[in-house]
Amino acid sequence: MWRWFSTLAISFALLASAPAENISLTGGTVINPRDGRIIPKAVVSIKGNTIEDVSTAAEAKPAADARVIDCTGKFILPGYIDTHVHFFQSGGLFTRPDVVDLNAVRPYAEELATVKRTLPDTFARHLRSGITSVVDVGGPLWNFEVRKLASETAKAPRVAVAAQLISSVARPQLDLGDPPIIQIATPDKGRELVRKLAPQKPDYIKIWYVVSPDSPVEKFRPIVKAVIEESRRSKLRVAVHATELEAARAAVEEGADLLVHSVTDKPVDEAFVRLMQARGTTLTPTLVVFERYSRTFANKLELTPEEKTWGSAEVIASLDVTKLPEGKVPSRINDALANPDAVVERVRQTYEIALKNLKTLHDAGVRIATGTDAGNIGTIHGPSIFREFQLMREAGLTPMQILQCTTSNAARAFGGPTGVKLGAIEPGRLADMVILNANPLGDIARASDIHAVVKNGVVYPAESIAQ
Ligand SMILES: [Zn+2]
Image 1: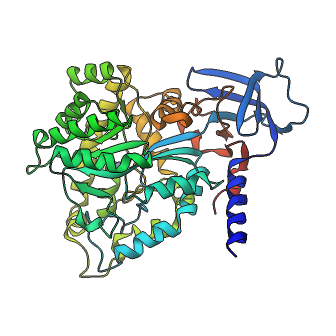
Image 2: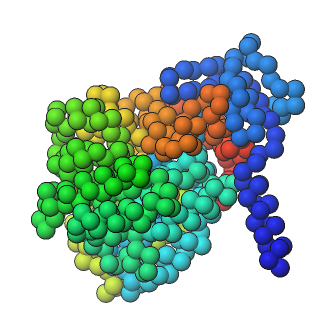
Image 3: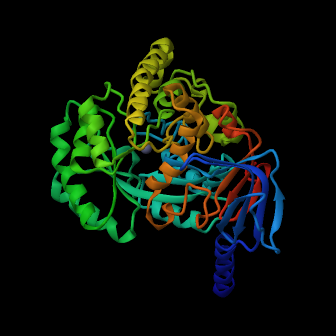
């Protein structure tokens, strides 16, 4: 029995890692945001899981044994990369009991069990949205298994992970034995946790630098410093959640590699912009998540057509707060329902700051990597990236700039030996691509008009990926 099982496991692993054929994508327009190059009537030669050659039709010498796929009229881009997701969260209403405790309606244990059981489906929804790589910037130790499962699953994005969040605040409601968030009170405890995680080779160490009256910026700063020092010693990169300007400044001064959200409390100042430039810190804006919690609670959620079509139907159904049983509605949701206009106005004010900050930092040459924070309440795994594109456009980024943030910049944030092979359509890169029906450079909304997705050298017609 065990023999049969292990053979099966091995053959599945091979299936995911070893595409068999050579493919030639001919006649499409290649858009390579890394250097802004556009190649009409291109020939992209794929050998196994790697891009071997990118030429014009006149120059190309397609391999004799290659399967030719006609891409005339199509637009070929590197696969999208979402640099901020959480697989331990579904995107549904019951996924953050520390924010709204709905255990009386649906026990959190049940929610987590569903999250784990439906992981392959969640992977497929990312791929359906053209997302061929993601960074999970924090969760339980189980995240390391998520990374492994994704690497063994064909219809899945490549996954980089952080594990437990080193936090300024406690979140006991999320602790069912493998807590995602760990409050750390001293620098030594911070170093200890980094040393405990290091053998599992996390792609990032994650710090949750949450500021409150009880936890001002300076109180947690020595822990941030110690954690970054210890991570450097283990050659690990550090991602920091810091949405207040002063916390973000402290994190970058201490050496953070990645800020995982926009600054939302005030406009960034010149000193901060110069600091980001000088340190080469990357920023992931996660604009979409800033509207989704509060809009969900106020029953003002406006999911995009992409989210409604490619998101999980069960997750989306859970977001209807009017279906909660009477008497079991948490005060945070009741308050939002009582005054939805005020909620929408606060979202508008947040965007007024966040969108302006994105434009300022981008114009200054700070590296921006696209990310959604998918998995949080109302932020749908996979297609929420298209709402993120809309908001980046509202901030004033051009389609080419948005695509660069989503491919080559995001590949740098993915990092490691895999990251250097992602994010561009160039010889030697991994064959992860999106094939579109329309030109996204004319309108970024067309980035969701997906004809097919190529992952690891395998071409998936869009309709075949997720139900
Ligand atoms: Zn997050």
